[in-house]
Length: 418
Picture 1 (cartoon, rainbow, N blue to C red):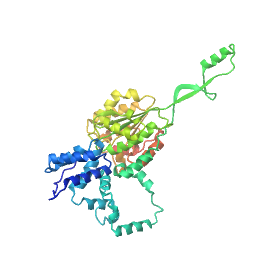
Picture 2: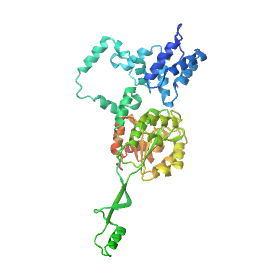
Picture 3: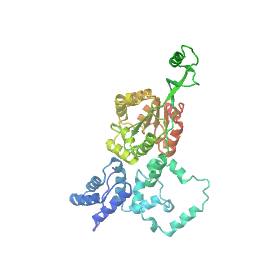
Picture 4: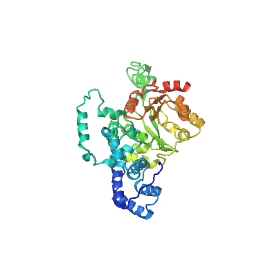
């Protein structure tokens, strides 16, 4: 949480009404808050007092936040509502580019856009006529060469999406699949076009004909489907990306005819958690809620090497059979021992048919493998691709069955050698 600023306490604060309005904003931002929690929050503030800013923050936090993924939204709404005396003007300038004037452009912080939308709900009807005229003039501009709203959404960073944009993105991802080609196995199946002779079936057929050999039974390789194993980093810098990617993996896990034998999903931050059984639930909201309750280290620290060691030791032999394809979703910002990380990522690559690393940091054109964790892991992955938008996941779907695809690995390996 960012450093708390002093709270300006008005002469007639009307805390009950303010807390109620604050709870409504949290509800609009996506937090499941009912009337009972609002009453509990008012009573808690009455008992704890309104003297220390930090105590006030954590009192409301204890009443309104019960899931790790809600912490960022609560923090941003609290900052905008309670700490900034000009929060409304600030949010309107951020939400309405037409009236920004000459102020400095910047992207909204994580969850800040959703917090602003929640607090600004209902203020659009009070905008001055000048803004409405500017909006009308924008409609008259020739936009034949501009991207559509859906195309913009496909390339928008997950971290910068609003609440409505996230809902639209999830609907798009619910129809996206990861088609995979089958693998030829040594086992065979009966086929008149096969090149191998089925000796046993040929001899059995001749025995039924009195020992006369009339037809030669043939075999062709029997296809088998690989497993998909996803390892999702849910540390503070990755939680929003992994949450949406897990929504996508739920679709892949329950898709019919996608080709995967099984889909296994693990989350890691400071520890490894197997959430595979939760993704098998048909309802995506129930599945992700259960997965969030199972993983207790959401938005915590990062121990990639230790978590990969736990996976290689406890789960690799169980889920990596049948030529598994591994998706590693992380930004590679490791805080542990780099030697342990290198040993475990190398073992993971040797155990998998393909190891594909999805890193949201590749959204930056000037990204370079300067972080020690990234430089350690990069040589031991087969493909290094972006994972920050719908378009990046669509690109993954088109190349996941291409054995020669390396994504951005070749370019970054050249930069690493320099």
